[in-house]
Length: 316
Image 1 (cartoon, rainbow, N blue to C red):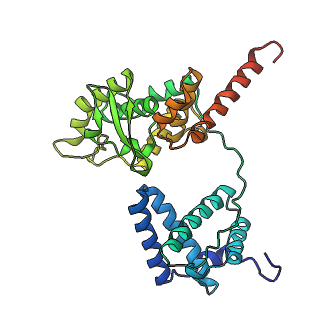
Image 2: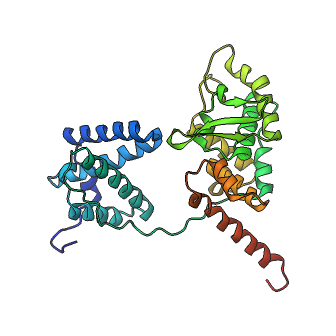
Image 3: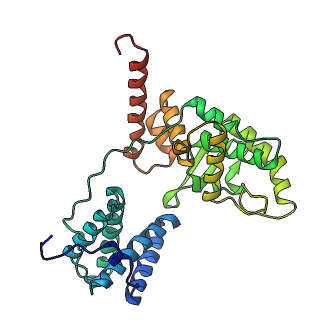
């Protein structure tokens, strides 16, 4: 970046309105990304948010998405870094922009790609955080199963830990995705890919209890597509489930910063590996498209073994 190019403040990044031509280009990209790649709505929303932020900043510089240069992109990234955006956040932004310019160049709507020859920020290896098996047991037992909502919560926690579902997959479950007779779920994951996931006896038991006893009480004659519903017969949201997990985690004596719905997915994977599960099988259960994504759990298991050795071996 040249010394003559001052780094804009983040207020400069956030204040300009979004030009209509860039708004139209972003929506065209999102529509194309959905139709061509079948991306999840959450991914598309992230793309839209990243592109809108960049387009608004460009407008303040007298530029637009179609004419953005590499220097402008450098300046935008520098401004975000100065405003304490994390390397991971900037890496995600750069990934969005690369996908945007690659697609828009292919269909002839931009002439140059400012992301070419631009290196992504180096990210530290972030190991997934997992609970101990005892902590998971305490969390799962925290809901009051004598109440319809408590029985629902118990079933959801049992199911999440038994299957390693993503939270969006759990709250989005429909009745036609569950086969209680065979003990499997048909889950639609990222990219619209379906996979079969075994329930396990405990999760199957609590899911049956919820479906037969609690769900009809919560619905009170109303109809809902979602398996897991609220007292208003609406489907559970990710935010509601997050709040519920935090509440039961507190009741189980687990520090709030250590507990989240995704931690249960990590715990599912880590505990399976600790008990000898095959990495390829774990990849299928988690719905990872690449084995390299699943391999990070081997580091978690390895670190756990190191701690165990240090704690219990006489020369640890």
